[in-house]
Image (tube, rainbow, N blue to C red; front, side, top):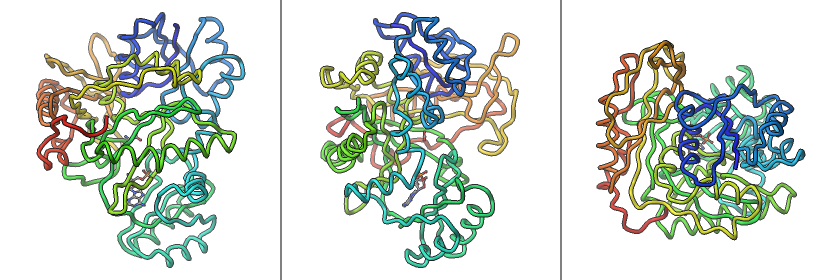
Length: 428
Ligand code: AMP
Ligand code: GLY
């Protein structure tokens, strides 16, 4: 099979690496790609925003499957245009991508179908938003309604902070058309839960925990993710069953009923509260860097699973298998991230042993590698426990010479505090 992979992050490098292991793979094309992806794919010039150009490329190169990595092209309807012209796609339609593209859409769906989530109010003007603040009281969470690249969420500890967030959303141009969702603050531990779907059948596809803040001890501003590990032992087998039956499966049924069946990867950001799992948000694609740890543990043929999902044949496939090993990724970012990252810093990767280095913001300059983005490398290792995976990942991090880079030193701290994960029981 010939495959076109769209995207340029560490997530897409991990997907390319895993797709390249499939005996079914013919030619792998990638756009815009990065130097890591180029080890497994032919990089082609293609703008995912130009749907006609993508369709033409697929025709000319006999592409059998298009894998769309990031949310932007999905929310923009690229999958619909490809399917309408006869191409198979891994990723949801524009209508189904609203699960990520509009927080209000997802909250309303949860309310309608009884899917557990924080209580909320949608407000399209400031007055309505202030009324909602009064109702919930601090601490409270305020979210811009639309894709906001991780910057659209404010967890306000006090009423003053909540009002300042409204200033930002309504006057600072952050809100998508000024619409916000005001939410009850949920207490508990967060976990990421992945499910693979073909519109009808849905199966669990691994768990992980992300580290969103830039600094050690979960301090500083939010980022796209500074590290992750899988599995998240807090998601036990029993918890996984609850998540599937209370959150994922009802969502799949609801989407089918609405004429927007979901296919691709559904990534549920969960809060595990005293009352049970509650949905914080959906993403309609793999997480980055969660994808890196999942691919490191996946034993099944990724291409076979993606092809089955794209063709509505998941029920005929063997369930996805993951190693009982743990995997952990440490992101190395360029100094300045998540603000303005330093560009052009030289990177020399030494002997990293069994670790896998997934590229994100890198480029080739002369005969060396330089940083050209915020998150630059995802150093990923496996081990029998999170503690072992973490030791191997940090040994590799320390062998990389990248003076203008930095990483958190405490990735996996939650699992370490629990004594490290032993691989006995738990969900995938
Ligand atoms: P989101 O973009 O919706 O995932 O929100 C970003 C982060 O804000 C989440 O990962 C949580 O840490 C936090 N958050 C969002 N909603 C809530 C909530 N209702 N209660 C507590 N924390 C939340
Ligand atoms: N790591 C969080 C995300 O991909 O959304």
